[in-house]
Image (tube, rainbow over all chains, first blue to last red; front, side, top):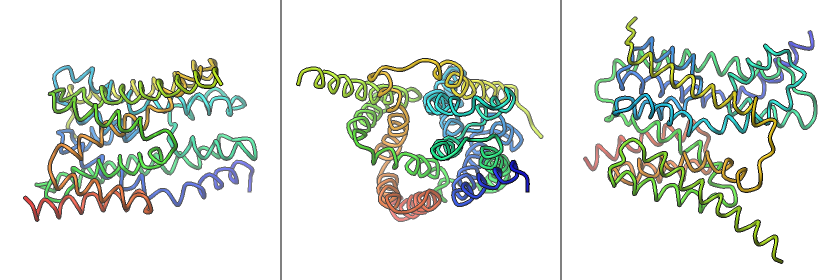
Length: 234
Length: 100
């Protein structure tokens, strides 16, 4: 067995137990996309080109609002800004890749590819084939799962009756839980949640996510500022 | 195979915005060191955004959504993602049936 093959299998074995998440997530994304008025082809194209479920679902929420062109980008940026941090960290570990390998890795970066590369880096050099072993199965599942969800979603006439519309919130809760458990997360979550609710009730139909998130980010900055000040004056 | 210019334009914009986030991280942020306050603000973004999506969806729509959200959080403390998704959908569907 070649070294590249072994590396690919190492990545694949790590990602295997968590593949159930992209399977269900992609299915919901496909079903939601067709409910929002995309064709099955458009839904699949979107998954193949965006390859970031949270951003896709959030963008679909504001798909028909006035100034949708701006709101969909804000939605994608606000949920996907974490990729900037993850890519910055991964970039430092993949300087030995060829430029093409580096750009493929960055353009298809996912939460698992980032997290597993960080852990791998603790014990050995991260290779392109290792990351491919993680990303290739996720990408294939993502695209074909969206197609399956879109085709089957077309057959369901009342998605709310089955709770399908709420699957999106289920996904977000599952994504948020590890963050909520971290120390210092509670004030940030309370600030963003409370302000988001207030903004929604005040009628900011499409911008409430962004407004709430900014309140949470401001709270995090404020807490870091206070901590830094305390450290200065013992 | 239907393609709508409106949908295709928005898909392109979402693609570009998402790619920009990944690329900015690799090209710009890998070269600059953030101070403690800006890095705390950046690190808080996922939890801030996720909570700003979840809280209004769970707490402003009615009892079925509030109950299902609470159940999903409790289940999620122990169970994996796929279980949380299924439990959230099943609970909201059952509550809508019972209460609606």
